[in-house]
Image: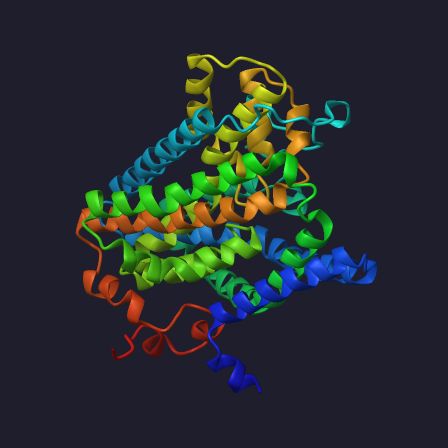
Length: 435
């Protein structure tokens, strides 16, 4: 039985989970089957909870190891700066798409909602909170609370210190490498459950929301999906062609397993092992990929931190009758490029949205209007995030001349990246499948 499941493509397992989840969700909603809705909610919730459980140790060890690994990378400082530059460039393009689409569609115009029930979400963000929240008051507390931004700060400091200490820090670095391997192995087991998690998450969304709740927000929901699709299938291919002289179809063939898992899991950090494996299979050197992918998984958020807050800010302004000036649109772009680390790779983008709204002086209660449909929006947002996290290292490596273009061109002819692929010997995993 197990061998039969291994031969069944992982992407098809997720697709079946998606289809079955939608079907069960409609059955539960149409017939008011409360136990089925509860079961779907539990299955989906457990999957996300397992992903979140791995986040603190995964982020810390991955970043420490990635920073130390820069010791063996030629021109490491230049690579890091170019990675940051391309993070900013693609984020700026993405937020421009969001603003342009918002001005074109007017997602909040004519929408009638009960504003009396709108309330500011419990988790809000401001520039003061963002800046002071980077440094933890208690390092243990950062891990206990799962504050990814603080964990990233600690990991960067510790990794940089270990890099400067040199040989004396090697036992500590070796310990982190071992812990990273252990956490990734455990996370692959969780990822193996993605088809079941997909069934539960999608099924619960359909059973809980249906189309009734989406109807008043249909224009906004469509705008978010269209905006993400434009970035995914127009902007990214243009960047690949213009900046890297790369075939976009090969990129999507190699990165698709990570994009697909991101869509159903709604977690950039939880998808990180799949993203890194996909990036390496696209021909990016492992030493550079081990730095760029963990860093991107916690800071590179074109969906959550660029497209979505831009459209959401325009939506909230229109619903509350607030006029936005050119300066306000420039502020949206600034917040999106500089403040994206506030999203920290976890499910949801509420902190980033409230940071944008507070910067513009818009009612934070406006974020409460969108909370109900946030899981539905978060799927496409996270898929866009992860695609961008795979894109930038690939483009930078291509421009630096370190990309293995033979491996890149063979990406679509290889076995798909998945839990089963991860457990085969490395020599077997990376060989192209004969055409």
